[in-house]
Structures are given as C-alpha cells and as structure tokens.
Length: 154
Image (cartoon, rainbow, N blue to C red):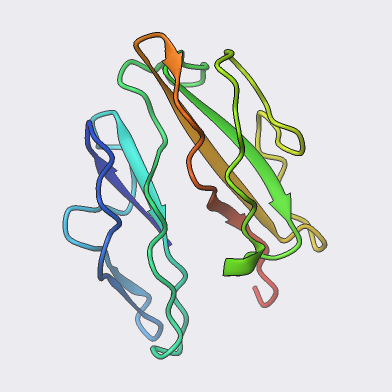
C-alpha cells in the first residue's frame, strides 16, 4: 500500500495503519492519505506490505519525495529527479543499494533508468530513488523504495 503526505521537509516514517482483508478497508497512518491528488507539493510517498495474516506485516518505507514545489504535470522538473531499477524479488534483502550520483542534471547511475520499465515474471520488483536540487546543487539519491511488485496470485 502507498501513503502520501504534503511536507516541505522530509517527514518521519509513517507508523501504524491497517488493512482489513475481509472488508478491504484501509486505515492510513495519521497525517497520511491514500492518494496525492489533493495534496500541495512537495509530496512524499511511503509504502508498506500488508498481508491477510496480521502476524506478518512489514513496516513503512522511508518517505521519498515524489514531487517538487513548482512542477508541471507531465514534464520533467528541475528540482527533483527519479531513477528506477528492477530486481528479481521485493524482500528486504532484495532491495538495491542506494545509488551514488554526480552533481550533473539527469545523471543516471549504472543499472538504473530514467523511467519505470514495469515488472515481469522474472524481474518481480521495481524500485525508485529520488534526489533533490537545492541551491543549484544535487543532493544524494534516496534509499530505494518499492515502486511496483509482481502479483503471483492475482
């Protein structure tokens, strides 16, 4: 599940929230919402894996910035960049290492792409990492967060 929040500064990792497998009702952590459509940029995203077994629950990922303050729909912004990579699975040990960047616009590290490619039966997880530009200098890339996951059973 993905959760979204407006915040100028990076928010803390969300805590709580639940999913009722029988009713498919989701309760999001306090201050977080189900979509980013009504939020004022910058917007942050976090994800968590819920299962029908309440004893098997993941934790929320570190929030990543998914929009800059002055971005326009459908165009690349100049203050936030996104890169993507895929792995064979989405478990905790399967996450890619945080990519290392250079202070160059549109820099894409080896084995990463500028746009999502989509999951496949072999590459079952797609990850995203972001970085922000402040005072005309690019910061480091974020810890990769799960962007998309292959569903085995529907």
